[in-house]
Length: 309
Ligand SMILES: Nc1nc2c(ncn2[C@@H]2O[C@H](COP(=O)(O)OP(=O)(O)OP(=O)(O)O)[C@@H](O)[C@H]2O)c(=O)[nH]1
Ligand SMILES: [Mg+2]
Ligand SMILES: [Zn+2]
Image (tube, rainbow, N blue to C red; front, side):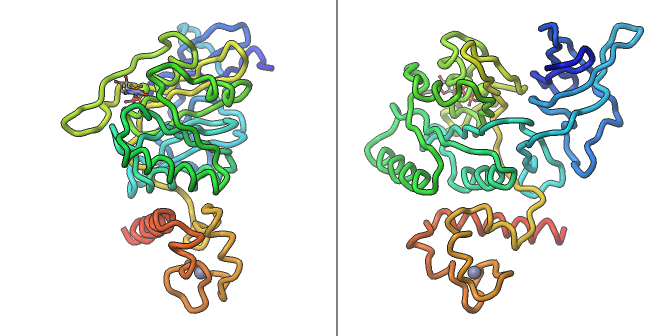
């Protein structure tokens, strides 16, 4: 339960935060300049899903004075190598990553970086492959291969066409939980949200056919309460997903299948890049998919590069 001066951050526009109070009203709040969470350098100190304390000033404005301890959060580097970070949401039960094989193309590196981050913060993740209606036969095969891969790793994976509104299965997954919807711009996050609620909760936009990319239609994060219980958080599409605060030796822990095999590496600090007695490398292309190892290497490379910048 929320106390009188507590609230839930449900909408983040950047400059102000919409805070839901215990009486059910939403008030636009400003953020104190010095509001910082120890150890986190982010462009948005308050994220959607945060529980906050608020204070009304004599001039009628309301300010967020503190952020209550977070159960978890999902954070990324704004671009792969930037030093700025961005918190996608806090206090969530699961992340639903919406991806498309085409229109636009979601890269497996992007998928795996987000999944690794979810592992690092112990947030369960699922994959929703959208726009199945647009796939040709080759793309359909790609879809099934990826679904097989991620299911074998324990990530629930679904194929849908959000546009046709048949999203009952997904809705079922969302009821009673706080779900962060994330993915590249134009994959259909807002379309899926509208389909789940059965009405237009938020704006959707076309993708640029010249560039085969979304046009960043959603510009703020907002959480929407499901009538059946739970919340869905729609977020602006993101381009890159840079990981944060991972040590080189740690990255392998967040790739389940790499971690499983790495117990047999000769050296406990092995980073699986050609060391003697490495058990991981011989498994690449066998129990470890090439694409997963590639994603793993891309994170390692980022860590090395940011370290020497
Ligand atoms: N053919 C087809 N088009 C879809 C489907 N889902 C969404 N779209 C279209 O894809 C475009 C982008 O959808 P949005 O829901 O705005 O995408 P978004 O992920 O919210 O994009 P951002 O807000 O920019 O991050 C729109 O033109 C949608 O109509 C689908 O299942 N099939
Ligand atoms: Mg959107
Ligand atoms: Zn190794």
